[in-house]
Image (tube, rainbow, N blue to C red; front, side):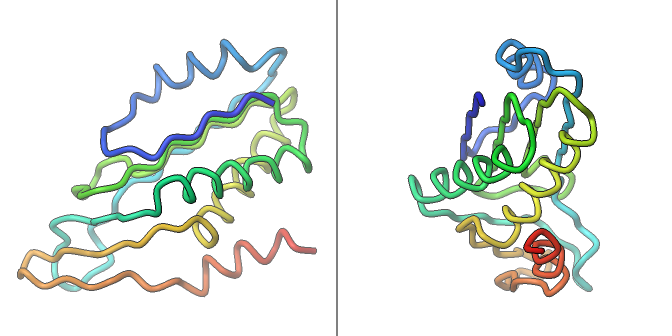
Amino acid sequence: MWLKVDVQVAPFDLACEESALLAQAGDAGAVVAFVGRVRAHDAAVPLSALWLEHFPGVTEAEIARIAALAADRWPVTACRVIHRVGALAPGEGIVLVLMASPHRAAAFEAAAYLMDYLKTEAPFWKREDLADGSHRWVEARQTDEAARARWES
């Protein structure tokens, strides 16, 4: 499996990243693309920015480990993950997952698996900066843990 993982400040270009993935994907009959975006509606006070921090080197290795687990479960030919850090405004792309496989079901499942583990296992710390000048750290959500747990059976 071809795999590329980046944690970066800069925005990503979906079309460019998909083209690069396809060049490495072999006989992929399916490519699933997931783009996660910063939401503004979760706080009573409007969000001005979501600030993400990570542990360089460790974060990339953990994402690669999770992608390898997905490739062990499904016939993945290529995977591209970009996760952004720094200050992100509402509506900006925060994460990109591209998953290529010979079949669509495997591509969908592998991408969902990777995202569910990424939300709970990858070492990121998120802080919401609110329009009133306050901020708060984002706590782990039980719904994310439940989504990840479904893959353990």
